[in-house]
View 1 (cartoon, rainbow, N blue to C red):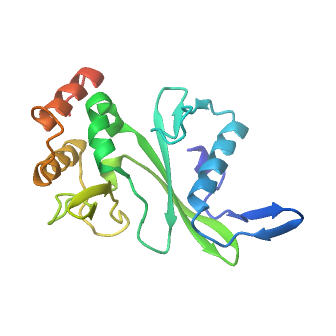
View 2 (spheres, one colour; view 1 turned 180 degrees about the vertical axis):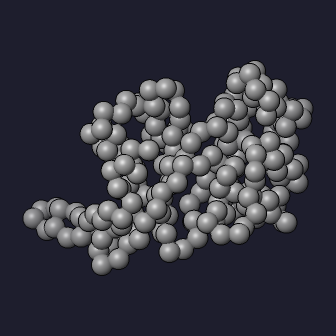
Length: 207
């Protein structure tokens, strides 16, 4: 991978802001994920990697590469558990009906260390969504739940011993169990069967 070849791991950077002659390093971690995504976009341009983005930057995916592969960018504090959202639960389960190949999208995840006004890339990974989450004894998979309503699919710390899904089918089955548990009635028919059939038609492979 070109990021490895260029020794990106261990590199440090400074996030700064300049307005009306006042320039200062930004210490807030809230914007680091967005800045790293913009940095990666410029890194691809510099390395002549072809890609394009949808006009609505909030739409999935973050980048579409020249081979039509989809790439999402995530980032988290390497010294803590991954704290980002993988996807909105409602939007994701709905989108899989039309885009079941979203299960095969790659996610480039940067683990960073922010200290002394600098940001260092400690590690990075490329993973599918189901490789970042796993079964849960309460909600069938890691979910953020508010007022008995699932809002976001959350990751587990894949660096440790947390049980993770080992295939996309188990991940989709857990989503289906969560849908049934939280009494979702927006889908006519069996949601899992719809995803299974749609994935077969779209990819010519079994879920």
